[in-house]
Image (cartoon, rainbow, N blue to C red; front, side):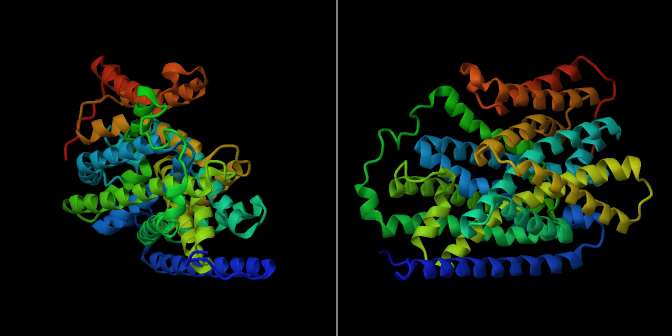
Length: 491
């Protein structure tokens, strides 16, 4: 018995004690969350505060907010599960993510902060794209439609993760757990908006960092003799085993997604001073490096601890280690860290989706003349509607967390990444070219995904061809003069 385990007692009493301990920790966690939400709601005076925190966040909040909203439950469930199942060859994925995030922070973040404010104080990605041209509603409608399409998958994956977590802890039915996740996440996003999400993400990002350090390290040091004695499968620690060049490029290609993720890009727009972006980048990259390393290490030690066939669901390896090794009071905190990762991303995505529909389409073109208070409440109503729709999708989970996230990540990255890069560097782009780039990127991802069963070149991660074809479409259409309205707005 290791030092983290509780003393043996009768099974029924032990199970009750486990549930009470988990419940107490989660109650404390939710209490902290709603306290933060309450004070944040007092700071939310208008729709701009609700959407972008009035561009008043400091570097620490932007850094950890971007990281927490980026990684989601995938960081504590999907990535450890992939490493648990397939080995160290999955290391190329976090390497690609680190490279992509660094380039995004270094070359895109500061520019999109200054450009978005100069272009009509754009507070969303659709507004930024539209204001870069001649405020044509068609490009906004297309942009918003693509965001909703892939964010619906993203948010549904998060609700599935939350439901599985609650189901693991409390043995409730899946639908009951799904409903709990829906109510909690939607409520705190509804009340506080971007300010609440940013404040909470700072807290949740810290909790995630703690969890990804303590679980793999405790597993290793408490059971190192047992782990060393385990014979790992052949090539389990070989970083190139079974991949080939297409496999390695596919995993590295995850980094391309950063340039087109609306829920990450708006974090850059929200910083109070663009000169603080370098400080935010250094903080974010340090956090990201530690968390990704912890997730990979968790998968490795988990595979040795349980064996490759020791878990029914590999994506539960973090949860299982937390439950097996620690006192229930500590396990509850670690479960709260998983919930933090899930909640932070879903909240950010709900906020982006609702603001895209409410602010960029409905309020601007349909319900004109709304007061500031009416616009704030209209954003909230749309947010609840989107969350409910995502919950309906999540009610029948048929995919793994990683599979759902990879699809949504590819769709957003390929649709918007090339265009965002060109816009922040003020390339001359026609409106038609921008629309074609978005559509070509999205369509390529969907088609490529459904042709993956053919193997060969179609086994390449769909974000790569989607990104390339989108870039080509924008460049060709602009050079061919398919439309004479050229983006050429200067700061």
